[in-house]
Length: 116
Image (cartoon, rainbow, N blue to C red; front, side):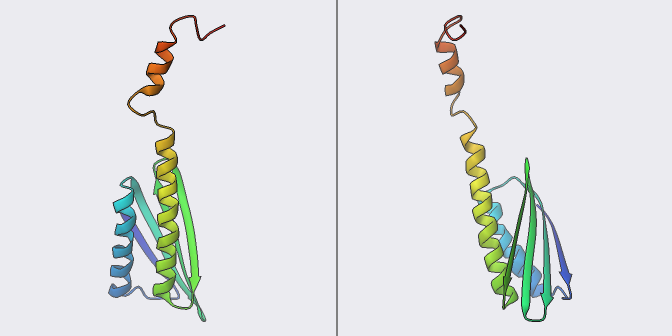
């Protein structure tokens, strides 16, 4: 997974970078097909905002979180992304036939029986 970490009105310290990378490993454990991730961290007075765009196969996922603390904003952001990725993974799995059952059911009907 390619990671782009950007800070607006904020310097990205090695500690923040390590924290974001460690949290994003949780997403890659649940779903292996994340192509790249862009994370933007910004500070506006007392609002710490974390945004992320994940590019997965077939879809782009966007989430953002605003908290009083940057680490709390990153935690909330990762929780949101994790739920979104698991939902995307579940939807992808629902559209896939299990062990070819869709093909077997169609061929069991025989030629001419399904078309009228």
